[in-house]
Image (tube, rainbow, N blue to C red; front, side, top):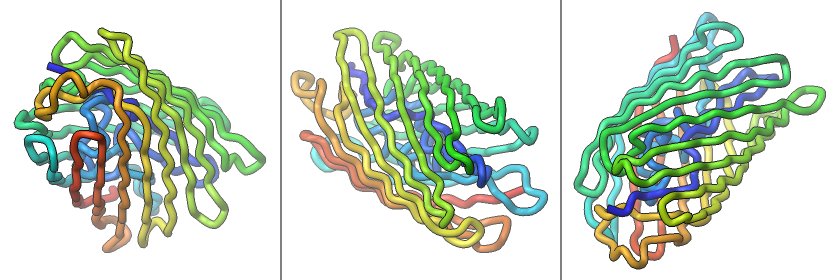
Length: 304
């Protein structure tokens, strides 16, 4: 089968020094099944998530007095036009600050894509080395052909400026697909700005190399987040570029499913019903030359 290979990075983490936020636009984004384990090629993996993690925007660590973590659970559905098999996903994820400088993220998800269902799990750690430098490491794996059987991510990030509101980073991912044949190596470059007014602008470029076949694909993304934590946060993500493969389960002829362009747009809303809990909802739209996917997801979160 043709294993999907997308350039979007399932494990991208960065946090704002002055605000002490944890931005998980990848591994534990907002309300979606963990992108960190899906072979970045699941031809639209990003949106494959209920609330596409990696597609989701920023997921700030709760700042409630005495709070050290957050747990979230949700479901998502997506309809495909031009391909076979709608998607049904569910997930549970948690973030916990084990020490002032260290945050642990974990996720367990069930994904049903292209008439196949798989279970995936992920664990990552974000650690401050100094007031300006921090690192990230993660490991994940899934049971389905469209997920990574094993994936490892490592990244380093630096905060810039007197107020350290600029954050740049570089990360490297290596993954083995569920078919035990296809392999990916991805380099990801990211930059983010945390404005004094509270909004956040993020952008990045992912360069993916897939084997066998030596297929290269480059993809860029931009995310804008605004609002007030504890009340409402909104975000809009736009993702466009090349993908290496489409999964055979999509029902697309093999000859045309290699190295193609695609676009994805995801608006997201996170609302606090009280100071320690609320809900998150998102819409998804994905398009490539072969099919379109539209979906929605919703989840509940609790700070503790």
